Amino acid sequence: MLCGILDVLCRRNCAVRLLHLRAPEAAPDLLAQYKLDGCVWYLPDAALFPRITKLMRQCAIPVVVPIMSYTPADLSGLPPNHFAHDFPAVGRVRTDYLLGRGHRRIAYCASTQAGPYAGFTAALAGVGMAQNPDWNLPRVDDIPRRLPCLLDASAVTAIICDGGRNRIESVLRVLDGHRWRRQGELLLDFIGGALAEVTAAFPRVKVTAVNFYAHQEIGRGAAEALVDAVRDGRPIQSVRYASTVRPPTWSSFHKRGEMPLQDRTVE
Image 1 (spheres, rainbow, N blue to C red):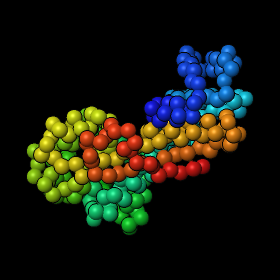
Image 2 (image 1 turned 120 degrees about the vertical axis):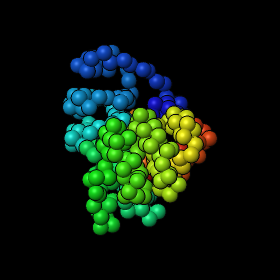
Image 3 (image 1 turned 45 degrees about the vertical axis):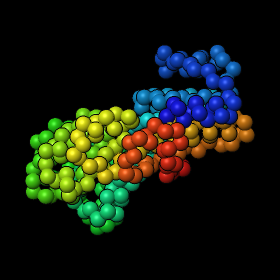
Image 4 (image 1 turned 60 degrees about the vertical axis):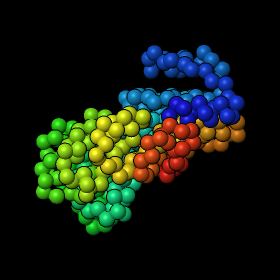
């Protein structure tokens, strides 16, 4: 995300000053100490959202807020001018990919309390289905205990596995020793370069597709909006981005410009 921000600011010939905020209440004084044309409030904690919203109403310069994560409960309190993931849309994108490949019985190895699960169940409802709760494995320790039983019974034909190295390794470890890996399909979250390393340790397990989050696109979008506001007076609109699912090409993960543009929702 930071790479996306700095890439835009560099290309558009902007001078950048990095300010470290020791305490949230010091923000007005800190911004007043410097002659600034705009501000990127980078990855604030959700507890700061109300304070940021109040500060933005009092601030004379445009402010954009790129956000990495938030819970469904935080959604209504996101600060203005935010650029973030659209987690329900992420869930729909992942599910639509597998539905399009004919899967209807999908194991869900991820939290059922986070936004992507709402998108997952909405996508299933769109084809007249409801998720069997027995196919949900929300905790990492559920995977070695319960996933082998689902595979033994051929209860599911596909698996969605959220990010987190421990979770992904746990799923791969189970599949590596099970015949299901030859017939089922696995969709993993992208966790950076570590994903290639983790999957290389389980070469017998085929990864059907990878879910790429819009980290760089969020950074670029926030920076572009800020520069346009400073230079042209354009109003800033909050944007939430979906993800992209595609088959893995490990060698291209770090090539500049390789990541596809993401679908997005503009508020």
